[in-house]
Image 1 (tube, one colour):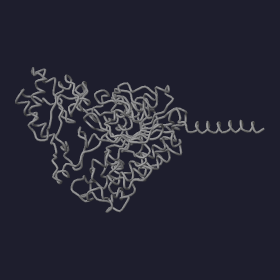
Image 2 (cartoon, one colour):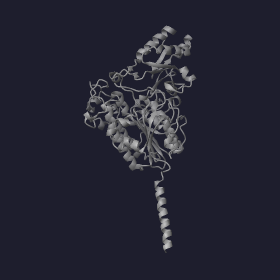
Image 3 (tube, helix red, strand yellow):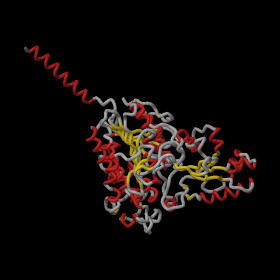
Image 4 (cartoon, one colour):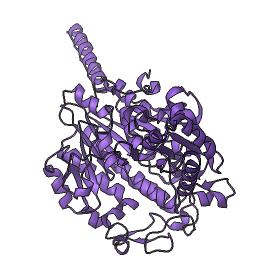
Length: 547
């Protein structure tokens, strides 16, 4: 009897141990991947405001996740459209083709928007905001490859206030919804649906934009405690129409009529709130993560960019935005824990670009900086070209620090384009603020491996880019308005967060140089799916090859 009891106890305890091991064994794949892009987030914001972050928002990402502290964009220009495309395709504009938010197209004789599509129409929103699709992006995305890997059983949903922040991450095979500033609703286009899904209609019926715009934007804490920002009342920020100063509180109902109507919500933290509410609705409406296949939810927070442009990275408004976003992320992560289980979903967070300091603020602190007058330079180029090559409009476009020459006129007058590129490049170097100028011919012929010229080449698309590509001096910006912008290859624009958290992600951090084009290949390796077809990035080994 004693021997039998011993055998029984041995079997029993081995069974318990086996069950515990099985319980601790990670799932073979996550229920859902949540991609978060914070529009215009510097890496430093993780640390600059952390004294007042909660334990469950940005701090949780740093504590429980894996952070690449030295992550950068590896091309010029650093704009929203190229940023979202590069994160999800794993490659740069040279390959995926989204070379800017807007760019000049010779064959059309006009500027084209990165997500424009004249073959589709609006669904659930204003007609002018509905001609949107990802067709101008030439590479597949990680979201496309996830759909292909499951024979399209996996669901993909992209959500943002900006249409490009929703449509490009959702890829060619996913669904995308963006905010319509004319109606206050989330909408889509006929690229995706002929009518809005019922869950989106129900969400729009809640009229949340009206709710959020019926209040004041006041600081979350007493304003004198915002020690990481300059004085609220200053001369560097861009006031709303109807106001002379940029000071708290902001009475949104009184500002709404003259400041974009529903679009005003974009320039407040409540744009983040609205975006997350739509994300919750998508999870419930599409039953994301419930089918047995890995789904993907791409969320882009557009409001930090609108706030950052108007007020700059040293503003109380920006600090307040991140303190509020931190608390909303905490609630969101807690929701994901409850909905899926703490280790059964995968999150990554990054940004589509960072931002430069306001030029006038830098000058006030005796830091070299400058405003680059694009209109003046264009006038000078046109004058030089007429004197050198004869009458005519030799410059077709000057946008995104790129010059497009008039090929038809050059052919008519027998002017060699390559020679014209070189001569104009030499001419432009005479002007203050211009550090370097490269020709389109050089971009095609040379193989640049280092420096800003290498970043230019990674952003240069043979079919779409210009004849001259300018690099401005550090802290010089092409802007003639209060506030600031981005787009350069300097670290203030390229240095962004990359952090993974959740399913199969080790805890830790690395200061090794990494790029945003490494995100999609990392996901491919983790999910055991095909790389996006244009991917040039490399998987983050610290995450995928953990011991």
